[in-house]
Amino acid sequence: MIPSSFTTPAATQASQANTAAQRPMAKVLGQDDFLKLLTLQMQNQDPMNPQTNTDFVAQMAQFTTLEQSRSMTNSLQSIQARQDVQTAVQLLGKPVQLSDGRMGLVEKVTLDSTGAPTLQVGSNTYKLNQVVAYDPPQDPFARLTASPVGP
Image (cartoon, rainbow, N blue to C red; front, side, top):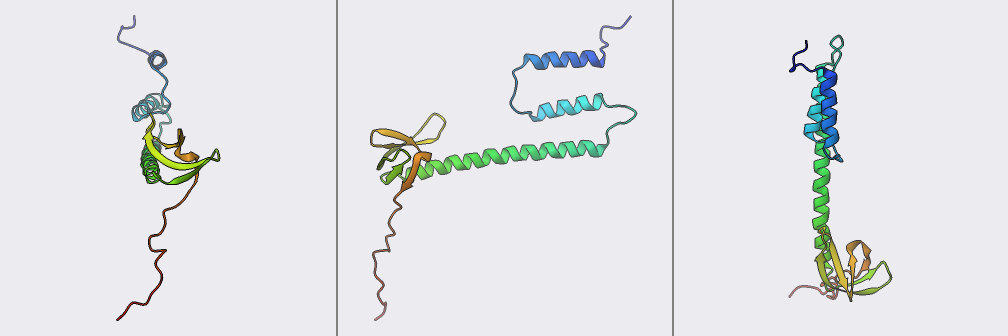
């Protein structure tokens, strides 16, 4: 008779598969998922031909690189979002040309539900990427004429 606490690897995998099927699907694998896969890989490897430490270290290095890449992508997206807000604020009171051919002064800047800036030009609102041209600020020194300095 088999004790009730004994389970076969196949039964364990079936139980884990049922648990995985019950939780919602994630878009990306996280660190916990990677460690679970690594543990399963170690448990189910061929004892006559085990994986070397080098293989495990290589997998860990790849995962670490992937995590760092994701983190950097998130940081860059955050920087871009802040820069978009700053750009929109700098357009306040300036004439802009929009992708629909209209021109007008930016009267107001608001943030939508995602945090992206929207510009109010007249009675319409536009996204920042709909601005196709704007008049850059005039150089305050452009009107000065060159004159010799001296006594």
